[in-house]
Length: 177
Length: 177
View 1 (tube, rainbow over the protein chains, first blue to last red):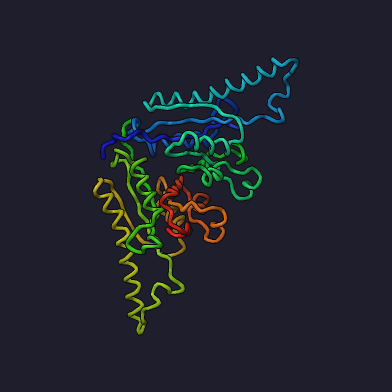
View 2: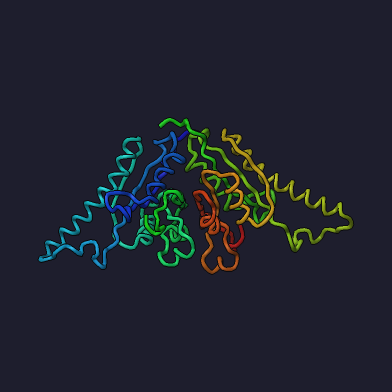
């Protein structure tokens, strides 16, 4: 069984921690990444190629920047630049790890509704596998927050692996991540 | 990244073709198995250990054996024996392939409701990963037939990978497999 074929292209959607903010990855996506390395890639870094996608959700309420003062169009431009740089620092975490392990990778940022952007990017990039972390919410919590992973399992046009956080790693409020 | 850790234990639920019957595997589970070999195992057969689970659904209506004549308790016993042998022939297909590729595996049969048995066996055996094939039915078809894969993604206590059949391989009636 020679490994002569092209590497397995693994797309992974990554997001920032809702508790610690940028540049810290969420518990779910860090768990999913570590699991994929230890259980799938194992001793075969040349057999895999990671594609990290970070989706920034347009902040309609502007809560994050409620203390800022916007006096000119430039201020808004600077805000967007700052968001982009924060996103790049998040991606840097994953790219650095791949680099150290000798795994090829690419990373990029998109804007929009995460579940729809992920499925559109799968259609465009055609990975072999999509890895999505999940908070493992119960049915009651799911009704209110929805889950990206559930949507992707149904709609993404490639095999999808769902990896739940360990119960011991869940924060006090399971909706946090 | 030496592969010194224990092999990744991959549980895979396999079933017979609803069109061709035993010992032929369903399109979904054959697709899922082939995909797992080529995209995850790749050139690292020693890094994986397969666990094949075949679930036989008690045939409440007895449609399969509608032409048989039952005259004694022995006839029923023989029917059960015949079902078991058919199930073993299905498992043989997967075990043979693993053997040829040098992948360690185990296989066994259980009876009951597939989605519940799969989740119970995950709890008992604690694999690293559960692979489930899916017919990729639309929402309308799902309402009537339910889907084992959807249930497992939500309830199985381990990461789950869902692999849909290729559209080109789907039979005329997508509920068939």
